[in-house]
Image (tube, rainbow, N blue to C red):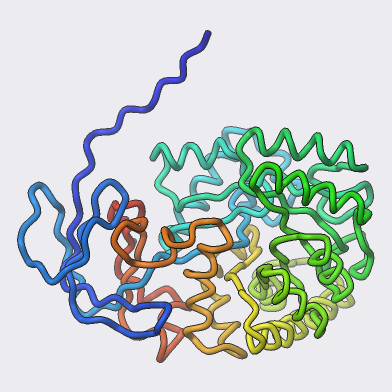
Length: 398
């Protein structure tokens, strides 16, 4: 019988961050200078102490604002190209190498955790956990599920029995969640207003996820599709650009999460992605983008729990931070920052461990020049980022 050998890692050095002024993302208060000690991937101590720590790497963060590491709750780490046919032509080894680069670049933008929403499997998450890659923590969901004729056909499943069988296999293999396409898409052969999967199929998926202590995320756009998904027990709504009052009420009563992804439409409209789109499709993207801003404003005003997501692919990946600037059109900076930290941690099941800076939490944090609560551009353009600590290790920035 094959024996799985754990990789050997040399002992990890403690890290001491001096003169760190921590921005409390719950209260919005900037604290006094403190020392932060990180050991074995956790924050071991936050204090006024200036004593030395044996064998530690010391880093002075004086003059910087220290924040929890950012969380992208709707990322596509395996989609280094915006051309899906090109991706399918890649060998598995080459694809893995491109994915490793995408992940590392996300870390260099300050994202210390990402939730992949279609493509990454548990093997990639395991490689990161074993520190074989310098990358953000990864919550992997495996392939997207769609019915025959549905949007984003990466794994086609039809019928309650087939859905349960497929979910059991994915959860057995370590999937953290499963995304199902419950409607068409903006750039899709399936009409935007069309509904996918029957109520019975969605209910079976939600039940199977419940049994595995996992959850279902839904790709949906229209108010009808969002309300249906929430009534059937879906936990996170992805995109959801066309919300109405019923949707808002259901978000609140069900305790579900909303993950808008404005950056992906902005990338198309700006010309960074979506090359070759015909004028009618581009006009549809522009409309869905504006409606997405309106829906975000409604949900935020009502107190819906909103995560930070980007849904970018290929050349668009470099604009992962643009979501901060886009949301600032309708939200206050602190609300946006909470989405990318506190709420993101709740979405991925890491509340109290990620998305905060406190003793016992993951040693994932960033430091920036300036005050992101006064100017969200401090985060949006990335140029103010001066330091990243990921799993207790300092990250070398360019």
